[in-house]
Length: 115
Length: 110
Image (cartoon, rainbow over all chains, first blue to last red; front, side, top):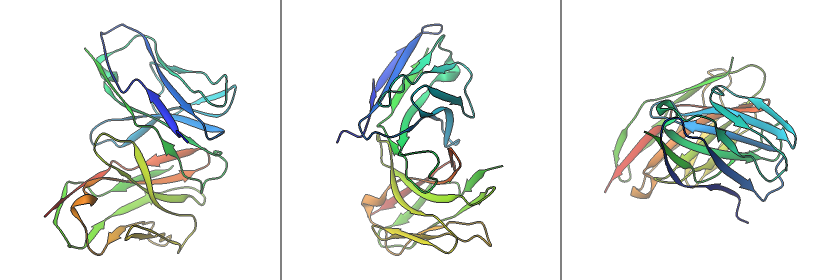
């Protein structure tokens, strides 16, 4: 099992550019989510999805869009990159958001720098 | 609301020392509690979990007990190794979301 796969691992963007961070999981998990990790702030939830066709905002959604057309994929789009979006981004999945005792599985992360 | 507070690091210990990383939480309802570990350049991996009050989670010599009366989930290990050097995150799961603490970096010196 590949688990949760994120691409790319590293990316440098210029302010105003757009890009998509890819996330795919092969565990047939209903629930997928995106976090950003910043020093001293832990992981903050950007967007999440409880199933194909359903997405919702997390704690810090501004500047990011998501869609969930399939169970496997949950891409994160930056429409117009800003230096404040420099961060490490993690995608995670779990069997279902309704089962609170299930663990989340994380990808390896994407380190994004906006200059 | 839901939130997790954990002790700030870094924590520096000598090999074979006793480890405690404090974690307290605020939550509505009956959350599940988790400890995740992040090694350099990698994603988060589940270390242990507890799903109800008084449950003890354990793995790889680490353990933590879900204390509802003190809203705590402190991580302990009796004898740390250099290979335990990493960042440790306390987290709670409630309804559709995870809430993470800010992370505690552990450095273990030989």
